[in-house]
Length: 371
Ligand code: SAM
Ligand code: SF4
Image 1 (spheres, protein in one colour):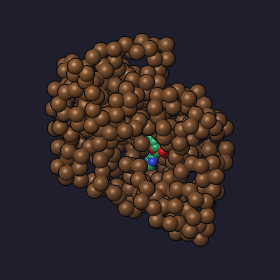
Image 2 (cartoon, rainbow, N blue to C red):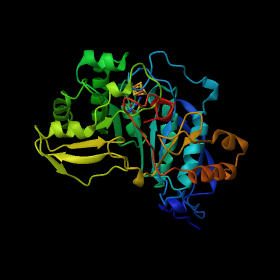
Image 3 (tube, rainbow, N blue to C red):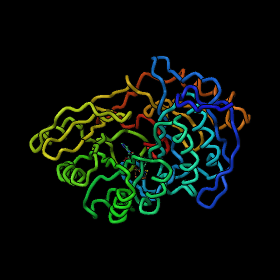
């Protein structure tokens, strides 16, 4: 009898066949799932939000030290605490079984994790099977010249590249260690590989607000979207958040002097709200966790490289999935832990940046939870 694979994610697999695939010179033994067994129930939180999107931070390490993200001397996790790439694959696949349709690989800097392409390669089977809609990546671009083509070969179609300025000296200052020309080479390689790019820029008071129109024209001139992000109070950094914080309502008002911003209903499943810039014809996004949070539509959770599940970027509550993952080869224990955690997903975050509130909303840095 011929089994016709279903593309319905909820009808996606329980039966597994082990298969060996040769990835980047490594042999990865991965569980290949077939689509002929009954659905698993999707994960739905107490507010009726179905969890269809996970962001997976594959490392907390990074080759940059952006001033709003990290302090200069960071303590990173011991490597022994990290999930292996095979465990990350199994965890992602468990979420796919429970209704995840999008996976964003992030960090730290995801492309500095050794053999990371193995994970992209193995996740691509879910794209091929139709169980996943997309795998995306958020990167600082430093390693893109090396990996862009391979990412495209693994089925990645869209990437986010973080870049807060077009000025090489300012770029070095804001990232402490970054080289803008390498990131530019990475963008060239990504476009040559056919990846569509969104530039992410954190809006920083007195740093890039005057440059914003130029960055928009540059990005749109290269056929890239660009999104500005409000700085969030995550983790201790050198200096005060209030000195960095630029409300996007203010930036938007400044942009209106130069551009006509037209409403757009474009959505990517993330938190950005988009407008179309009439003069350039390009898309401009705003991520405004402070001035206007969009928690009511939140379909996301985040998993760290140690298998800790954060149900909200801006809350401390978390669940350990590494223990349940390692407890049994079957996913039943893991599924129970995922269900219990999602049942605690809060309604939203309560970020505050002002002169009175001195402590960050959460102690961990963005590089731990992943952007
Ligand atoms: N290293 C990769 C990168 O920079 O794209 C991925 C990880 S980084 C933590 C993900 C995103 O978070 C980046 O766009 C970065 O600018 C943003 N980010 C880091 N710290 C932030 C903060 N405190 N507030 C807002 N965005 C932040
Ligand atoms: Fe690294 Fe990204 Fe954080 Fe910058 S924002 S320090 S590139 S993890």
